[in-house]
Length: 387
Figure (tube, rainbow, N blue to C red):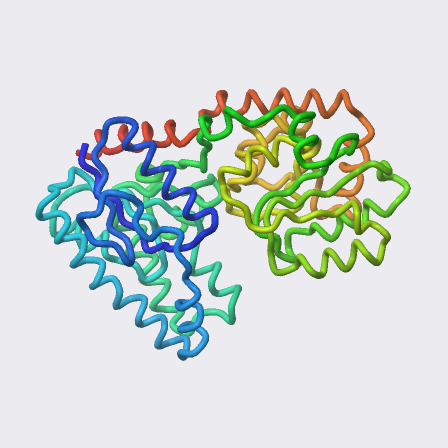
């Protein structure tokens, strides 16, 4: 098939991983994929400027009144629509695949003009998300209309969790037009990861019980609770916290560790190339998901599973779509005081439990087909039905 892939993302975070992996998986299945994205000409074949520095966007957003910025987002739909139509004129797509973003209606407009199916990937309910963060929305009514128009106008809506699918249904999208497609993993990317002992040796962590977290650490992730627990008698003296990434709370966490006498047992790698991630995650004895956005499908979770790590995670509905308590994770009630700490104490003191959960984690990827290739196959099947 010829797939016209459209997104409005140019970040360096997990969004870029999702976009790049999905495009590669579709191409590996033999489909032609033409990408239309910011800062990229329509005839470019690759991921273009995906992952570039978007600091200028954040600066613009900070300087402009919210209402003006939001109207500019909506107006960008016209720019993107023209790019999509220019690409479609030569490419003649069988389908448009768009990554949903707030105020982005270009895919819907192109679908109506071209008469081809539109598949809309939805990673979060952005009206709700932006209403709760960064000072909220100035044009909330317009945002709700735009989100509803995009979701209801697509031939298929692809939320990443069943929880998120509930938001989509509540917006008026019929259930038969919704198919959950969770985040996946590229097995080949992790196939050459070293074993745990070798990974620890490379990082100078021999003899340590490594608690690991990957990604951009924010205050709501609850990593400060991990550091506090490490200072208690319940934590084995050889525990080591390794954060593979960075984040705005790094300095606070390092200061907390120093105050508790744990400075040499809490380490941050800082931002590293994604090719280096498998060799770091391989060193984890316990993989941490202390908190989660209620509707998300965390990419870090897929990394933990594919490398067979014993996972600690809250028993939230979205995570329960993938994790099962005492099968592939040790889960805790996030509303229960001390739930996370109790789970850590139990897992760090029971090597047999860690091994059993690790085995269950390794089996999960195949059992649920949580791969980007599997997602590409799901998309192709949906297009065949829609045509």
